[in-house]
Length: 298
Image 1 (cartoon, rainbow, N blue to C red):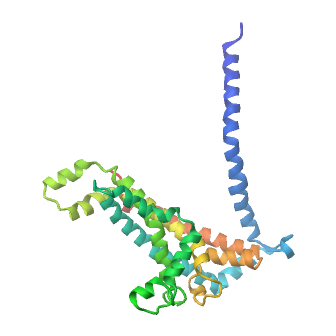
Image 2: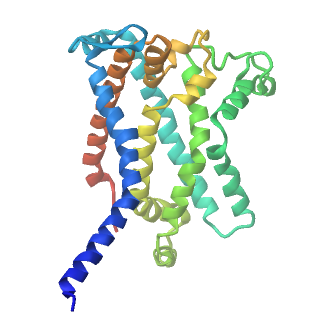
Image 3: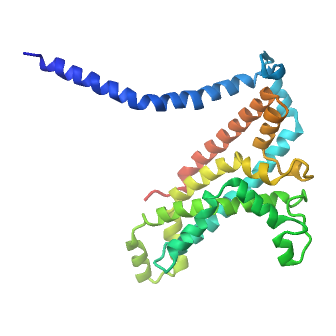
């Protein structure tokens, strides 16, 4: 008669083999597509790329000294921060207001939810083409409607605002869906009790909705802030290389793309990425500290 312990051991080994078979593709994907590129990027930031992309020459902190001393780096970082200042707050506030209205039982709410979410599923290239036409100084719809002659995306003073508006338009639908999900988790008893006590809709919004939505709001703000600090495709497709406002609008990821892929200086580009990652880590650390004071968990 076979020993039950051996049977269990054989069954456990078979289960372990199947478990490894299922998780191995994911592990390989993480190692090949995530972990190795991170390590290689950090390594390249200490190197000077060889001719024709072959061979790296170790230069230590030389790239970091050059990047941090280059005014173009700080200008691009400031451009990115300005973009985030527009996209994150306005994208969150507008999405929250829309979510409150669309969370009510009204006719056509499903259609409006779909309409507002459409920008998230549109191809970035199509979005860029449409907005470049809207912003066109001679034939654009905006200048024709308002009878103006404004260079929306070629004036260095306002181009970054125009780019930020596109960013807000693009993320409203995503933020709105998350807010609607958070609103549906708030018990209706709170609003009924507040209504009995005579609280108006505005007071209910600020004293019930906003505090109880703070975990969702914090999540959206944190993720959208990281997304805004790593923006690239929007600026790359809207701003032409010959645009005189490019220097005042290009993000730091755009700068990385220019040095790493256009100029072929991958070591310098990798250094820019590492600097950006460190900056994002600092911002995330500050936000995690602020979470304890700003987020209300019921």
